[in-house]
Length: 238
Ligand code: CA
Image 1 (cartoon, protein in one colour):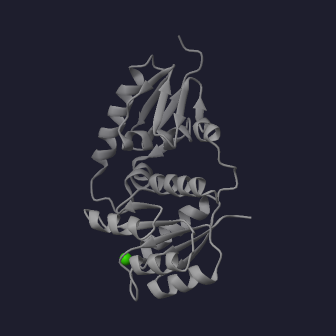
Image 2 (cartoon, protein in one colour):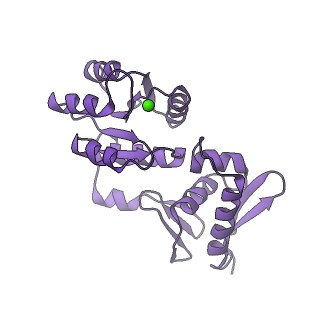
Image 3 (cartoon, helix red, strand yellow):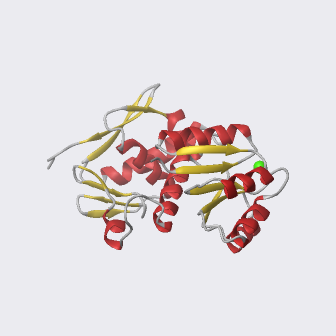
């Protein structure tokens, strides 16, 4: 049975992006673009998670969340807050949100939060234990990536990466030997409505590359002119 996520978001482009990426990850989604309908759907349906925008027509996200919690509904909720709106975050967490994501956000961040909230709340199929929590790792040769902790270990040494560098590496390492375009990286890591240019991608990749190659060139990021980047992992290299 796929996990079922209710998405309450009135901005059509963002709603479609959320729905598309969540279903790519194997989640089933229901989209609602109105606060009152969101509350109704949440009360009538059986969802494993709710992604709830704050600024909504009809009834805002805080009201939807408060009413749900007043009725004793404990479905995990991730709220979508506006940029530079710390009060929204505070108010949302007080109203009973399990986590929040600030717009604009990248798909990588969204999926990480969704999976983390499901795991914490126990709605994930896997039983939750501290051991499994620390065991989650993506490994390629001597490179180990801990997605939940944003930690990278290469040849036994921890590498300090900025969050965006980490997300770039995480995306590349899941596609070894494949050329990934700057546009893809931009959309996944920075979000579809990010206003910066591709230069931002290049700067992060080049900084990431330096940090990786300092460590014995086990992992290498090749630039493919006019196309993008490719991660190459050397095994047993001395
Ligand atoms: Ca909105």
